[in-house]
Length: 417
Image (cartoon, rainbow, N blue to C red; front, side, top):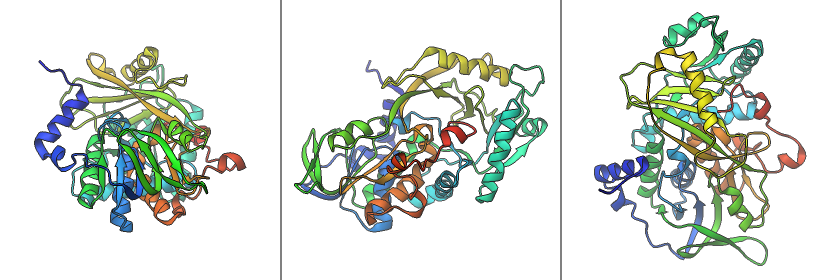
């Protein structure tokens, strides 16, 4: 009997249901494109879609070294929110939430966006102060967020343990109602189909091995396992591998890569109504439409390209989940995995032109990548099409690490995810 991974089974199911392997069968690359997008995850496919739909640029190739939706897009915990502290972050993530709200209609594909609410717990005085600071900052930026007492938090999420004798007693919570979840791999498939319908070439099993430049330094295309492919512009959107690809063009990136672990339980009937996150214990939980509890942890403390991570991280997370939600202590875990996230010094992304003419980069999202998918693709497409940033991503430059004008969500965020 042939064995499949969970992700391969999902891919096979999609093939049988929609015939997407016939529709998106990787075409032979053309000799020359207007734009090449390196990376066939959610951000790369969204960029290609918006280049075609918003800017009329359809001579585009998306190069994916594996298969569509097989990287971090299929390895995340599906959370959508925009309650970040700094103006730049709130603007970018809320732009994305607004796109999430109509995305299924826009691309004619059900991405299962569910604004069930995101609750961020406070367990000590510092947590309370930070959460209320975020709430006030969010309101000034027009982002919904409100404070809940422990009793109000339990009314919204009945499984929550608010006992004062708990190891991590709940002292309150910040709650963003517009936050929620979406189906991760459906986002990749939906953007891929919509981009393909507009003439974009999606070329799978095509790894980039080099970046070619002209005598004046301008990008002229990329070397791949399927030969040289020419392009006037190249956008790199390859989570976990951006530094490797950018080094091929002679650009050093301020990035480190870390494993980020998550797991899901056996499926059960609907019992958990929202997303709950705790920064103090670095644990977060929601329930998928299939009934699985989706549980995430913090990043490992060491740099690595491992897709497993340290067992102690998952153990600590499950200890916290079981104490905050005692009804889950007898649940069985179904599978766990790790994704590789690129992290910048200020834990904010880079969405910018590079010093190399015609080369653009979208990276450094850390744990915030999935929730930003529509907004990231939208503003990155604008940046590539116009050779200038959109006002929303104008602050997310490479130069900020030289000038010191950081967007330091590493120190400010109520939670890292």
